[in-house]
Image (cartoon, rainbow, N blue to C red; front, side):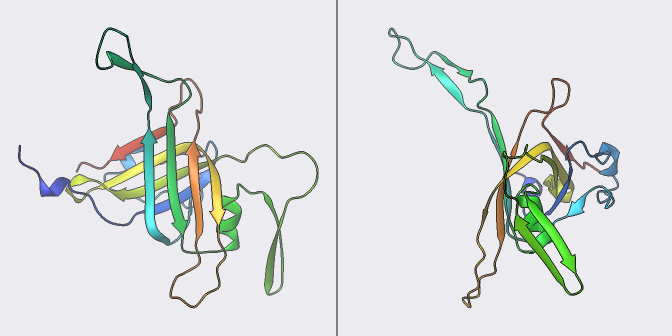
Length: 192
């Protein structure tokens, strides 16, 4: 079996966010490639270290006493997981609000902006979002991944150091079931 170098994928992509249920770009918008509608999808800006989309579909082995090896496997209900890991290089207040699922109160005035953690009362319901990743596909074409119902699990470090490293806003989005008729994610490749 010989490999095809044109199928090797490398390169940075772009990350966008929108409200849950946002209008998705059409599949046809991949050829010719067009960016997502900026009125719907917000560009997160630069990243540090790229981003990783990971699908985990664990199974449990079927083991019987009479066999040396498992006789098969079954998927475990509720254990499939899709995550998107990213470190945002643009540590803006707007990006911070998104990765903490809008759990801040924002105010601003002439020459200043402020965010404060929400306080008091019962924990609010999660503010789900839609995530869109535009990257590269085999053959030098574009690939678009859309997560339709995502919730961020942030780990934010606000470092102010002179070691050449930049402060980033790191987050892991987990994708959740949308409905019985809407898939949690889509993967669209440009082919021409």
